Length: 286
Figure 1: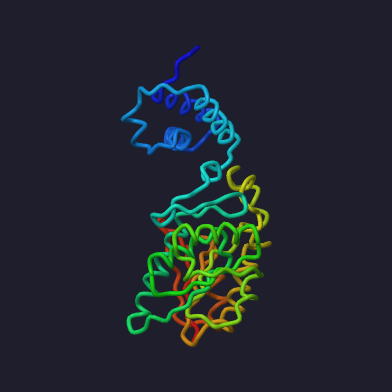
Figure 2: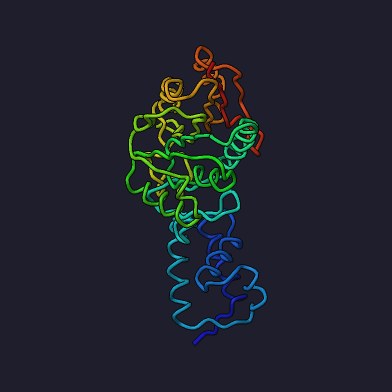
């Protein structure tokens, strides 16, 4: 029987992933093997001559097969790093992305400026999904209260699990419903990463996205602006005076969003992401 060490298995898996056009084959081989062995990645190198037993090999083989079918790594491991914390995910929720970390960072800076003279600050996270935005805000800003809203009951189960795991459940509540409909009270900030990909563009996305992630969390209608426009229209009724709407948008949607928002919002800003693309809309009601 062939002997498989950690080092040999990483080399083989990297080559195997390359044949399936996995974008970062060696990194993902490391992450999957560490996950399979319940180790930290650094421990793969300190124990690179470790020989795997048959049960470990069988388990790792299953994970490799799943990834070769372009199942996202986060769905296989069950979590995605986001804002320096681990967020539990499954196929009921969109996998949090770096662009959304920028959204959270902008929200944190905004809230800190607004709360210099008060500790009572309320946020609504619309389309909360895994709860990544809501939970990150509550974790890094201990004096705010966040309401996460999602139309999916299964997504909300994930969000509640994350809130409990990160011990912010006393400052994060979750409600089921469409966009702002469940929000009866007015809040200081509405933040959202809504679906903003045009319907016809969904099939051009990577297999990991179009074949695995929930379509409802991606599809923004014919022009990608269906939910963005609804948020622009409905948010003023749910914001306190001088409240803010903060949204992630498509890189090519900035001008259309600003034009749509100019009658209801002041201090309009479009903020770029880490790739220097227009990504975040910020507007304040009078």
